[in-house]
Length: 455
Image (cartoon, rainbow, N blue to C red):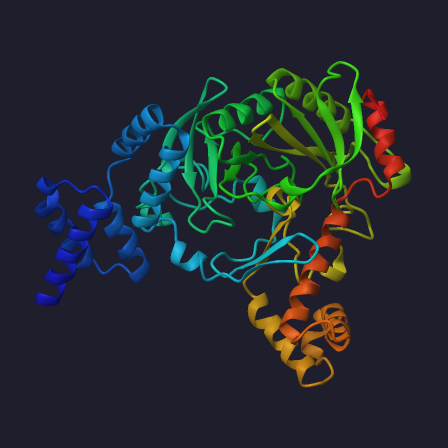
């Protein structure tokens, strides 16, 4: 009992220092924690329950965030909230920091996320990746706040307004990048992209200019893991896509003063830059309307068939010293007999590395690879280093084995691990090329002409 009392005292002292626990509530919270410890919850559940109890109530977090936002601005407000969510153990930063992560020679960033299971079923995305039990309709509804059955006891969200509609912002517990968060519609409504989406995203970067914000394409296979609930993703990291330059400038007849062009990027991406909101919105919506109805059978683009709509965009925003910068990623989820997982998806030879949907984040050059790869690739590296043939149980990694072996034997790398990292960078780049709806510049230019642009 003495050890338990000591642990409780340490926890309440921590909460006073890190979680703004009021001294008047210490005895009450200590008793609540004692009850949790005696409840028989498992280790992880017990931690979530304890820190949920020690955290400020959602209304108090909301009020604190709003006050900081009003008095000190967006960065101060998100700094406070992110730190709070790390301190109350909802954001598993200690686990995230252990994920392997490296920049590749071709300008991409690769991470192996050991904390989240591999997501391979696009049908679950349509249903919101829902979980039985509870009154929330899906895993990102605000009603999950404090819900023990989904390990959300210590989840805290804050209210924001985008486009005159109420949304909430929360951080991802297993974030893919620095301060990874989602802005979620308070209403459980399906993912969609229209003109209002661009307004909402601009409102976000006006409030939080230190963050980027974007939206997954609202279609299975090219969207995220939750399509049933409208939401955006963003955070505090400059992604590889943000760093690349325009390779071909184009002109909008309606908005000639804006800077528009095709990016020097493996995927099919158009950048729009202007210090005027309406210019960016008008051009973006022109591209969206043209793309969703565009077909080109010669290169496998079909806007709509008996299986439904296939074209969509993924918009992503940042705010710079010169104004707004929007990148529009053109996507298609069409399938074929040869490519049942998607014509413009990672092709089968790369599925041992990445079979999951290539969503908003990967399309911007940050690849989140499944945790299983850490052990699997380590074994392939050992096989190469020992100069052994690839055993049958690793047949799925033949491409990786052959190319890494060739890289290592070329003498350009000091060890097999460095050669393997370069191989992963190369594969991720080729996956982006797979997702590109236009492989040739003339085809891209042809689409843009149909959309009313001058090349």
